Each structure stands twice: as structure tokens, then as C-alpha cells.
Image (tube, rainbow, N blue to C red; front, top):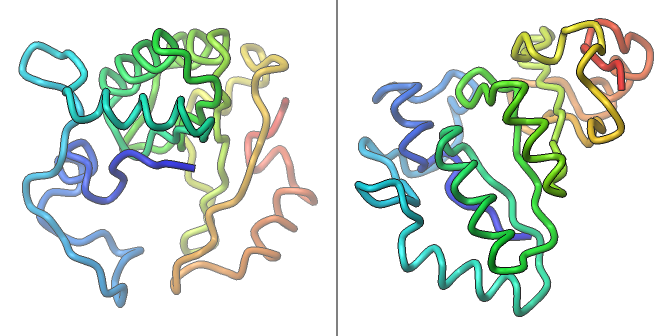
Length: 176
């Protein structure tokens, strides 16, 4: 699996500012202040990103969208599909810093992408964008909860988060 920028994405840095997110306290990671974007000033995928997409296609790998902005994710998905990349995972589409509108999530899923509907149990609370909690009206076969994101020192262990999802699916917005 190949991820485009996550913590180093311009969208991520813009959302959090120069402050390191609380969930990363204690993590020994380089913290950028500008961030990386995968598109040029015109909104086209950068040449070096296109080269990476061709390598992903050649090796039949999975492309994960990281913490890009919605416009970057839409451009990346469109270009990846045009090149023939078959395996695309849209990472955390409901996370507040990404917040892909529901209609764009549907468009991505109808194009063959998997949406990583992910539980985040930071401080034992569920963090999801409101589009996950629409009572299931807009979540069809394309919506599959794929994981929980309990891997930071400040979160409960994965079995606790996954257990909460199984025992309390309504709390997690899981109506797929």
C-alpha cells in the first residue's frame, strides 16, 4: 500500500496550524510547517505524483489518499483511474480535517474506491464527520467500516476500540 502525504500533507498542516496535534504528543516525528500538496497551481496532479501512480499501477499496489484536501483527493482519484490504478482507498473521508462531502464520497465509491470508514477513539470519544451519521440514508453497499485508528499512545488499545464498535454500532455511526 502506498500512502500519499498524511501528517505532512498541506491540508493536514493547514487544519492544525503549526501546533502539533494532541494525539501526537510524545510521538517522535518531524513536524513540517508548510506541508506537501500533490497538485500544481492549476489543480493538476504534479508530474512526480503521476510517476508514482504509474509505479503503483505497474506493481498493482493499493493507493491510499492520506490527509489530502477533498479537491486533491478528487483529482488524485480521477487521474489514478484514468491511468488504470484499480485499488484506491480513500483514507478517513469523515475525519474533520478531510470532511469529504457525502456526494463526493458516493462519486469516489461509484468509481471503485473503498472508503475507509474509521473509528477514532481519542480520549474514548467517537470522532466522525456528520455525513456518517445520516441515519444510513446515503450509505449503500460501498460503505464498509474497515478499521479503527487506535494506534497512538493516547488512545485505548485496538481491541477496546473495535469492541466498542461491535457492541455499540449506533454510537459509531455504523449503519452500513
